[in-house]
Image (cartoon, rainbow, N blue to C red; front, side, top):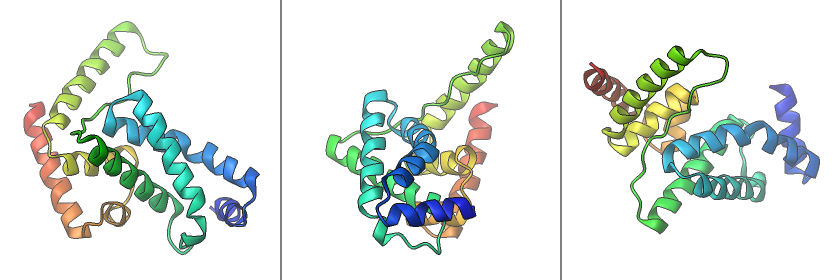
Length: 172
């Protein structure tokens, strides 16, 4: 945490190596988040790149009293929304595929479950789907999700509860 804070301070001062380290730290998480929303690899690369460009250009506006990841995910969220508006696209959920080291049966069962979850998630309203992803995959707190999506914490809690309930029904 202290190391990250020092890294951010160096990046704010314009130190290129610090910016590169921040990119290396967060690029995978941002890419995964964006890919789950836009479901297209090329668009995801572009939006992820755009997110970091915006981040580095706006570093001086970053409030260091707040978590960096929340600020960065807010930029990514806004970049995705801009992309959707520009291209007039509805977004869908894409889950990670199975990891290596599992036998064929385990991979098949996991893929089947992930497909069922993907189908169920695609039936949620877009904002609810995004809340589920931010909470369960990205492990952001209610407060952090509230800041990213510009919704109240109580709204986040309510929507997440309802989304989980609907997912349970859809998966039964």
